[in-house]
Image 1 (tube, rainbow, N blue to C red):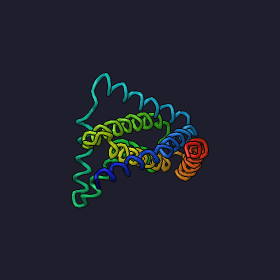
Image 2 (image 1 turned 90 degrees about the horizontal axis):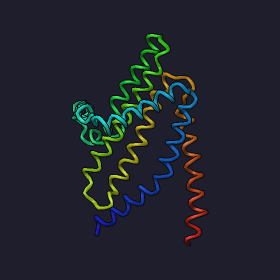
Image 3 (image 1 turned 120 degrees about the vertical axis):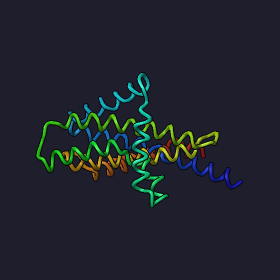
Length: 201
């Protein structure tokens, strides 16, 4: 009985999270569009990984290598060692950290398109392979735990990537991203409440 209640709660929480995920995705894209050349490169990177994943190889060994790094770094914090690797894409973070150093410390410019491409490539790799790994751990029929976990992990990924980008690229703002996400999500909930829930009641 307790298991059924917990699974139901996870399922409902995952459903409630959907407008937030959609709003965050739209707001993330909106922030990137302030720098069109970075946005295009990022999109190309995501598309390149999708093609590579489905038609060449999913790069699972590379992904698992990154997860091993987190396990070593967080070996004394078992709870964090399970949560952080999901929300913190190590290779995309490394690429964007290199961008920050390149621009702010070394003073170079003109290479943002390459960093944007590989950030998109490795973010796509992380999200897809994390989703596969988490799904394999959820033995439930509905996969409610997987849906909730991946929803939260995806939001964490967007926040981390955008935060790192904001340190190196003028025009990208984490605060604007959060405000836009909250506003959009609120409008989605309002529409759902007025046009769906009230009609059902």
